[in-house]
Length: 100
Image (cartoon, rainbow, N blue to C red; front, side, top):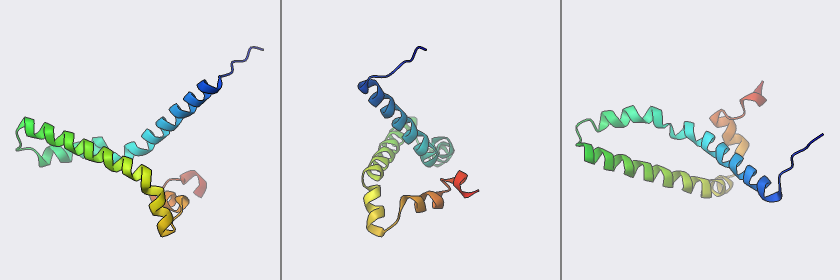
C-alpha cells in the first residue's frame, strides 16, 4: 500500500489554508457584499462615478479594518463581559446541528 505523508511544513501549510478558508467562509455571510451592494448603489445613485468608486474603496477599507479589529480583540471583549463563544454561536444560529 502506497501512502503519502506530508512533511511538517506541508502539514502546517495545509492547516493554515484550512483556517483561512474557514475564516473567509465564516465572514462572508456577515459582510454580505452581495446584499449590501444594491443598498450602496441606491444610496449613491446621484454621485459621480469617481466619487462612488472612492467611497466604495473607503467603505471596503473600513470594513476590513473593523473585521481585523474584531478578530484581534473580540475574544478579549467577550471575556471581559463574561460571554462564552458557545453563547455567541447559539445567538447567531451557529451550531444548528447540535440543537436537534
